[in-house]
Image (cartoon, rainbow, N blue to C red; front, top):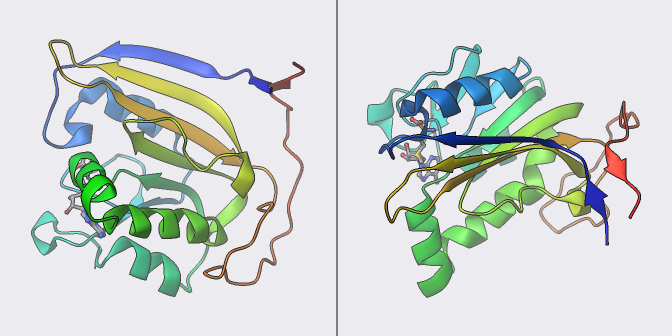
Length: 192
Ligand SMILES: C[S@@+](CC[C@H](N)C(=O)[O-])C[C@H]1O[C@@H](n2cnc3c(N)ncnc32)[C@H](O)[C@@H]1O
């Protein structure tokens, strides 16, 4: 069993339709962003970090109107230093359970997304779990944020991970891996 030392934040905010309408969570996520930032499910709230915004819904006025997976798969520009993954949790859960469609797509995004991230970069994932990218894909957890909404609402969970090494397994979706990978700057892993 592995133990990890990481930063932990517990905040209380009433729930909002759009995640970053919660100001404490928004400013914590901004704190962990290393420019240049890709916000893949951008929604309507702009982060003050100089982000590139992608959303499938044109009305959110993103920089790119695109399905997130299509964008990741086809991006040929410079790599990012932070990528934010904030998919629609309820939709994801519903499809996960009943049709396996959306979760399939989210897993595919997770398999592909590190190839457009610089070594040492971060992925910030929001949802109802703290699985994130995980060690299997070469990530170490640096911080977890729990947002308690009170009442009978589920908490929102946010996990911040740093890309420290190439993925342990490749997948059929992967493009060739050709990054120079640097060792984790400060090993934040504790011995069991
Ligand atoms: C939880 S909201 C993100 C909220 C955003 N972080 C904010 O605070 O404004 C999820 C967003 O994902 C977008 N979305 C849903 N499916 C998508 C897909 N396949 N590709 C890209 N964006 C998608 C929705 O249009 C919605 O704006």
